[in-house]
Image 1 (cartoon, one colour):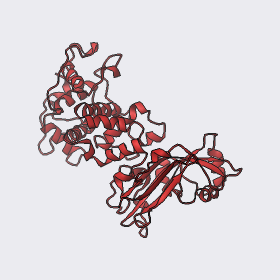
Image 2 (cartoon, rainbow, N blue to C red):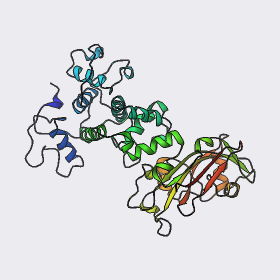
Image 3 (cartoon, rainbow, N blue to C red):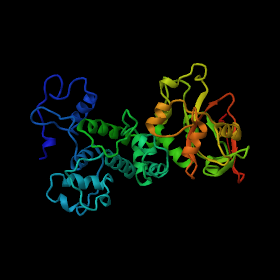
Image 4 (cartoon, one colour):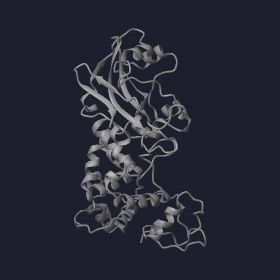
Length: 392
């Protein structure tokens, strides 16, 4: 039997000798052990910081997942013949967690599993069991993912939906620095918490997760407007205008709209949007602004300057208010941390010149949406139209 699954002797009071009562994952470890998912070592330790292998994680998922699986005896890997995890991996394949095509050179069972693999396995398992989760994977292929890897170096479409579903269902969360850590190895402590998260998600429908609903709407409609706020595009759609040319009224340049993301900042003590960590923290609270009925919109646009010496005023005066009119995101700490650009505070001419490499300057701008005055619109050069208004 694999050493990681030997039943250990628990230390009195703390459960395991190496898991202190105040350990961040202490309750998750105790719960996972109590449910029979994890076991300790014979010396009374849990080894919370040890990594988990592919074989071990497959075995864990096989234990957590309920229901019968139609196991195909032939569905395995040559390098698993006689391995202790062979039966568990076959069950994980049958349940849709593991895709054999992902491992053309063999499963390599003793390889530490990465956080991306965990995200993919679990999202795939949810999709195998529920068609709506399967649709969620399709809906989130091109969504904005609230982790710094999305901005730099970028997350390929072939991987993005698995990370989106994992984040949207709270199977995994990002790290304090805003990263997802796709290639990081998961520890036993992290895995204990992740398994409980999976157990919770598997008992819910996809639309019960607000974050996943936001990610899905952004992936399909370029906005989370209707999901998180009392505003709507009505009988129009951002899909009608995104990535289309809008010429400034002063003819100083053009721009294209990409995404329109809303954060519910009515109450800074109760912000629900999955996108909030990208754009706001407690330092952004403004007493005279942040009140009932007030939301913040974060708008991704690409500006294409035409006028020599293009300046901030050319943008501000060229777009009026409208859907693509916005101001600088003042929280440069978050902007720098995640790696996106916003409007400059000073030296605007140099900013636009430096960042204009023939493909425009992609930035995020901010504007406030108020239920008392919400009314914005955009008409692109080809007469495509979209608007924002209150739902009622």
